[in-house]
Image (cartoon, rainbow, N blue to C red; front, side, top):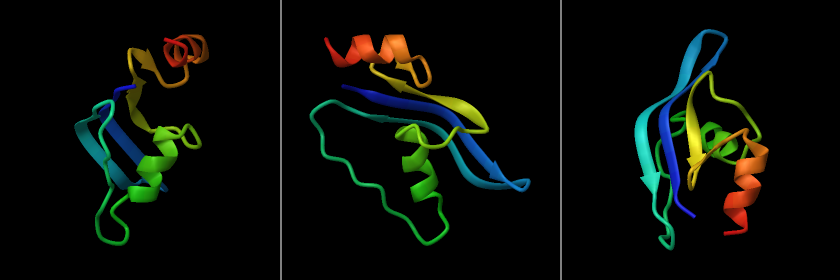
Length: 78
């Protein structure tokens, strides 16, 4: 399943901890998330996993936007 993220931003107490304009992970690829301490790696992964919500932007799983449970379930069963 392809993963795409657009305009992801996450603010904590008014401070930006994540700001990603665009990114994509293609199906069948192994991808790592690297960066220095405080770069937002855990925040990003929590948003992708659905454990946290972005302040702005969206995550798309295949063609389904995160938070759209029905479309996400349908995508999983394709």
